Image (tube, rainbow, N blue to C red; front, side):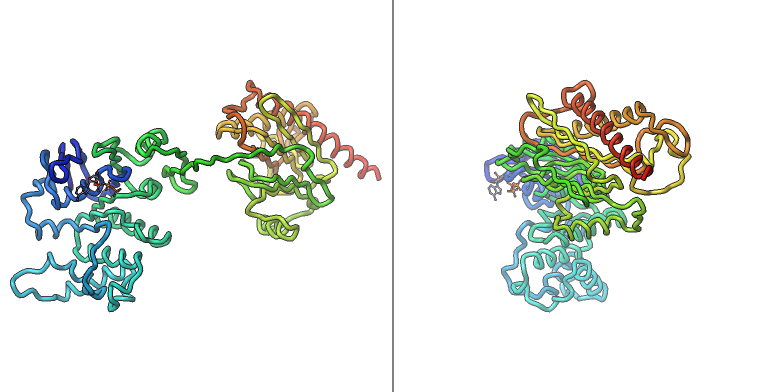
Length: 491
Ligand SMILES: Nc1ncnc2c1ncn2[C@@H]1O[C@H](COP(=O)(O)OP(=O)(O)OP(=O)(O)O)[C@@H](O)[C@H]1O
């Protein structure tokens, strides 16, 4: 659709764009990114022929852009500038109707049914039809932005050039607009070339991104490649962290504030509280957590950790909702809490604190093995979910990498399985040695202060402590709950 071949140019004698080349295919949503003043708007103006290039070529549909006159370009390309002009007092419909200019012919231009239909449709698509007869000056920034987008659509272009189209738009309109553009590129073959300041929106929606810096191309690739952490840090000269979007396979970039996370708190057994209903630990500051809790599962920041005792017969269809209600009733904030359940009596909790030079670890375990399962034989089991569970909490006073979180879970799981093996806990259904129970839960929480701990595999200092700690605590916890069971059975 568009081809830029080694273009150079700028304003007056000042060269702003240096040897920029890229190709945009039909149906692409193509992003242009770069810091302020990197030349994004200038490239966009060169694409529409608004400013000439001093050398190089801009090809539009296989023809040099200068071969087209303004009206011919307007039939193919619609431009939505960053600050759309609205100095005249027009109604919304009049402004949108101006988009039909390129489609009218002859000295006596007539307004056709087709023009009316396109204008109505464009207003509808952008949600401005309700204020069609209002004056543009009476609208908010976001509403005006949508009116000018409607004007661009009324042009029925093959290519849309957008300079920060989500500027002024609230979250839902940002999503709506970009969903709409994406759909048009995919279903109608519209080509969209858009400047973005928001790297995450570009990461979510673009098929291809060109990243500019000082008027030159730094990278022209798929979003995941362009938004590499090191590249963004270098080009934008600011600290960021790249991570995957939680729902869709798109890269996301978050800013790291200058005042970084600083947590002086040390998690020790002193803040662990046990009553008949639950075991809880409340930290003064949020901890970075990876967990499989009923509430607060996944990766996040949490301050409260609850292991709640429920009766063996506990069976609730919506255990998440039920658990949330329980937390609220007990005065805990569900959005800040990781919540687990166990049929084990809270008194039978075992915890141990391990202090090392660079870090310390608090391990808290409750272990009931009534539902013990040999994972390798799990397919032979019926699906029954009852709360007879080994719940393992690992609090690390240290700064863990993402790898270390995952390895901590692996190390803990291996150590737990070894306890069951050594104690010869059997899977009742298969008679083989169990490796866990059917509803085990785990959490690893870290203060994220102090020196970074990159790994927590079994050969690392942290892995060694987790392996030892989980083994010791789980073993004692099983002994304790078995002893109680024996006593109650004897009674
Ligand atoms: N009309 C102009 N006359 C002279 N210089 C200009 C003009 N417009 C832009 N420039 C200069 O050209 C360079 C690139 O500007 P451009 O507007 O293309 O950057 P941008 O990447 O779009 O920036 P922003 O993110 O701030 O919108 C800047 O140094 C700017 O000062």
